[in-house]
Length: 232
Ligand code: CTP
Ligand code: MG
Image (cartoon, rainbow, N blue to C red; front, side):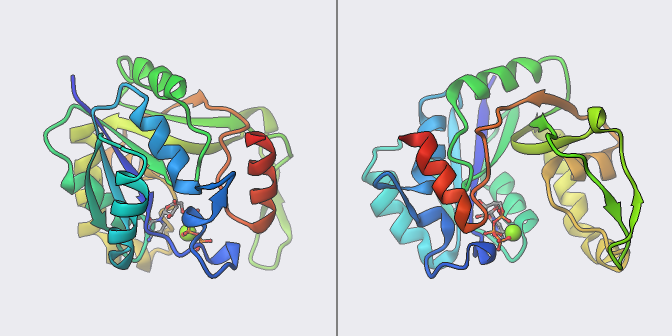
């Protein structure tokens, strides 16, 4: 059984408000992106497709992949405007495989052990994603920020990556998404993770598995302080 992973690093990191995109900021002397690539390198995954912006391909090749000897990274390709464009590019660049994992390059705390647990669960389900139960109560609000309702906290999870799928399932889901992109825009449907594409177009059940509270996404400046303290 062959497993490939897409590692996403083509975002602009607007919420970080830094000159350098957040995946290239330094954490304990190494770029944020290094940590996820290292975890996949040390995991059971066979191949990694790194997706970045066109003008950062050369930097990634020399300063990350070659420098740290990431032998599992077989391709470094250009992403697209939205995250889902980058994922579609990554899935299309994979060589023949049975399982696909999709991971945010801005999540440095994925581990080989987490990848193994996900793949074990993927033997039983078509789609498996990691997340954690919400610590805070979540409110659904309307356009004017008035509370509409409060979901039962015991049933609310925050979703993380890696998100993992049977390859044919996720490839078909993303091909359909790209085909129907305008239709979704008209309906104001915002695609923010991979499981959503499977839920929406394939009607398949997605299994949630506990990741870890440490498996955070570096998004805003204070996240760097937290990530640094995890590493120290
Ligand atoms: N990503 C990508 N291609 C895009 C947008 C995002 O590959 N067009 C990647 C990011 O590099 C990141 C991951 O998807 O690793 C999760 O996205 P997010 O946290 O939203 O990152 P950014 O889009 O870069 O940040 P922001 O939304 O604050 O601009
Ligand atoms: Mg974004």
